[in-house]
Structure formats: structure tokens, C-alpha cells
Image (cartoon, rainbow, N blue to C red):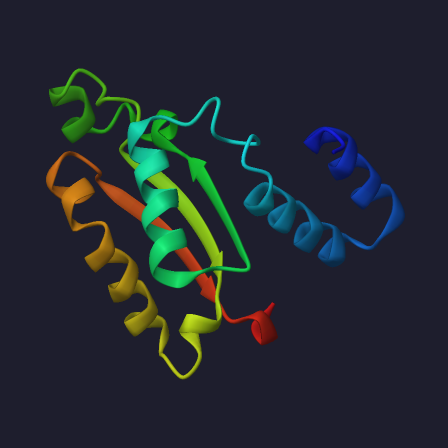
Length: 132
């Protein structure tokens, strides 16, 4: 298997921007080693629960916590645990026939334990394969 960075460079060089994003997203979703080495406990739990619930064709999770460490709630926790804010992009057949609000509620319900333990915010992009 090629390293993820080589695949990413090849994707950007050989196809258009929109197509390269699809390749990058599906590469990170299908390569079990791409994020697991650097992923923390909360990020791993998010990935596991989304995969179990939605069986996504692609999922990209980005830890944005560093951008929010100066917020008063995070300062009160000493900057938080480093896993408080995430951007999550999910493409799944499970979203067919559901509104954006319903899609988001599915994910929030699945992650209720993580929210109770300090997860503060998610930025969600939820699509069906046809919407990509």
C-alpha cells in the first residue's frame, strides 16, 4: 500500500480539485493507519461510533481544539484536554431521505457519552454519496 501522502500528491496532480478531495477523503477513511497513530481517545471514539452507526463510504475527522484553547470555557479547564472541538465530514447512505437536522441529531445522539465527558463542539458536514 502506498503511503497516504504519496496518494494525496498523486490525486492532486492527476485529477481536478473536487475529485482530489474525494480521493483524499476516501483514502483517510479506508487507511486504518492514517489517523490512528496520532488520534486521541475522543477522536478514536468518534471514528468508531460513526463507522458503526453509519457505515460511511468516507469519513474525515479533524481535531480543531487548538483553535479554541483561548475560549473562556477552555481556559477554565486549563486549555481543555486537547480534544474538545472537531470537524467531521461524513458521506453515508444512512443519510438518504433525512434532513440536515436529522443527520446531525443521529451523530450527536451517538456521541452523547463523549459530550458528557468534555467534547464541546462538532462542525458537521453530512452528505449522501449522490450529494458529493
